[in-house]
Length: 472
Ligand code: GDP
Image 1 (cartoon, rainbow, N blue to C red):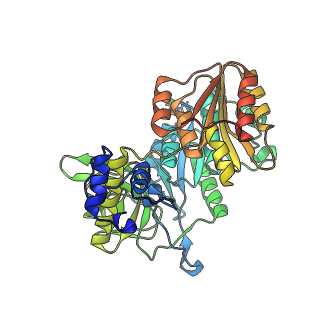
Image 2: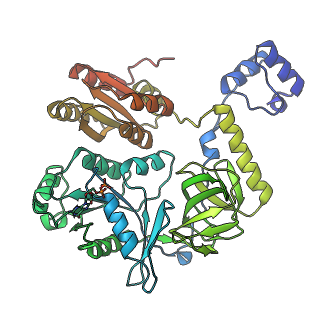
């Protein structure tokens, strides 16, 4: 900054001090401070492309087609509480071990891989539910290839079933439906299919595109058929990766272990990770000292779609943080340190999300095309009325898209979804829960609540016309 203005560091520092801002020589200045100080030296500032967020994004060079090989799918299981997600994960974990291998998977490391009798593998994320899924997505992680939505066939499509569906759809992740508990007397999968149809989701035997399978997670009935359908979906997706380069992927879990230091479960999504490799994840880095699989066996290489627990990082990155192989130690260290500094200065890595006031500005910049909304109201009639009216506000320039709607209080899960989808939350006669409010503050997500439907519609409409005055 000093160099750009052709003045000495000391001049900049003393100018800052005279403005009441205490700085040191290697500190990054806030944008408004830069403007202020530049003004003092008679310079005008134009910011081009400074983006702290970008510091955290690992760029991937494109792989050539001939380097790509098929990789196995990564699956998340979602659905309403008590519909059998954990039971299904447990059954698969215990039943489908590689032929001849004794025992099963005893370790819980956040993800596991099973090899089926036909030799093909599937990786499951071991924390079921759409909250974990969307929390990772909110940090920019794209981990799941296929979502299995578990619905208890003796129950019904429940609020969290709908949430899971919205969350998977917002992430553009294909879904397979598992109608569970068919061993129970009251099980009626047809009724569930009908309820899904009412939400515009048609399963294959109703002439739609979604695969579905009746199962009993408890008895293990038809689980193999479900796994086959996952593989079929995976074939359609044509999942590929290049195993012949340094690894990149996502951190699933990380913690400090008393005996072993920092441990992290990571999912290799491209390239191959080897013991001894140097990786950077967020503000942490280190050489992989040892790797273990979900059976607690040591391994030395992890090809694409493999989850491994690794030792050797100098800290615990957040779940959902990406990682990447580095060949140069000082470059790795620099990257990690630069990010640590940004985090220290910003407190948290808060990304600014869309607000109604912001729309006018983004419109003026010409980069605003879709307004994502999450709608909550006290009764179903209002949810539908509001969502219909708001969607009808779509114009040629801006499409209004309702990523989720539901009856009842605004929840943390809504805020997570808003974070991941850059959405505004609209509440009618409902309020956010305390946790949801806190999370929204923390993540910079806007929650607007109304008690007159017309006000909500009017305000969104004005915002879309760029008519709302930005609040400072
Ligand atoms: P989650 O909350 O979705 O993870 O559900 P759980 O896997 O914990 O299952 C909730 C309850 O349903 C437990 O008591 C399970 O034993 C039971 N359950 C799960 N799957 C089945 C099934 O296929 N048949 C029967 N009869 N019970 C099941």
